[in-house]
Amino acid sequence: MKIHENKDKRTNSKPKCSYCREEGHNQYECGYVEKDWASLSKWRFPLDKDGEPIMRGWHRITYGKSVDPLTVNVYNNSFTAWFNACRKAYIGQQERKNKAKTKKAATTRACGFCGGTDHTRRKCKKQEAFLADCYAANKNWREAAYIELVKNHGISVGACVKVSCHGGWQAPAEEGVGIITSISWDTINVFTALDDRTDDVFSPLEIKVMVNGKNRTVTNVNSFFSCIGKNGNPNEWHHDACNLLSIMTPAEERLSEDWIDSYKESFETLTKKRSLEQLEKGRPSDWSSVNLVRHIKSWKT
Image 1 (cartoon, rainbow, N blue to C red):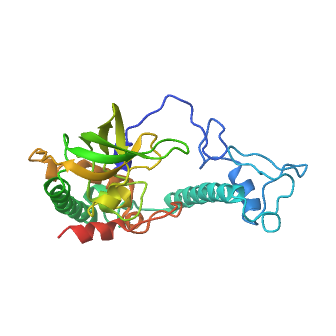
Image 2 (image 1 turned 90 degrees about the vertical axis):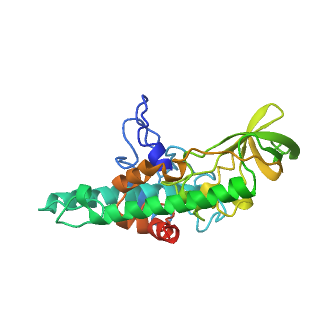
Image 3 (image 1 turned 30 degrees about the horizontal axis):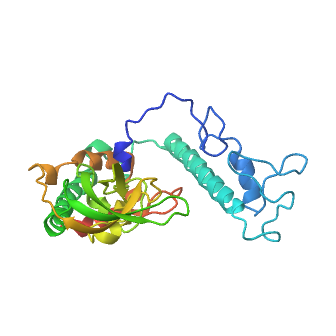
């Protein structure tokens, strides 16, 4: 899942704000956010001191000095994009301010997972119980997924499949025959079955197919297999994307005996970085949220 795969990523480049695109800070430290939000929250674009339209990072006004989207052009999406980016950064800044105030006012340490004051995250029984549920749910899902993908459909490395390949800009799709070269068995997990895309636990089933000398990514797995949800579907903007049409010659890949119980460390990363409340309701700054606890409970038995 994404939150686990990215936990150790490092970059040598200077930090750059995703809101204003200036170096040296991130969106949660950006000094432009509160000022811009004062305008955007009133449904108006930010202006400079002379009343002229400004540009903030990638965000700009596309229709000149007439800056009231309520009266000028309700179909222009530049306001929507700018509004959403500023809103996310503003909420994130407020979250951090409130968290800092809470830490300063607190007299006792609280568990970062459940919020209890008589223990820390390391000794949290609710976290321990949730992890046990995750392990059981993941084992049950992996068993069901292996049966559907491999036993029922023959999706394995070496299988011969018929695909439809995107032909590029305004070019028609072309059908072809290819061989499956790889499948992301190591990282797919119970969250691959989620019906909604959730960034933290994004766990796509990545199937690579060699077609006409080019390795392509299958991007319609959630519509082809019932055990895969939208969260298990790769990003459809792959330049090498193709759609799976049928399995011509199935294959049966044997996975290691411990595969069905592996990948436990990803759930441990999840509980270290998110509280129980966040797993159930998401964070206020999230675009959308899914009740991950409910999903785990649905698969644990």
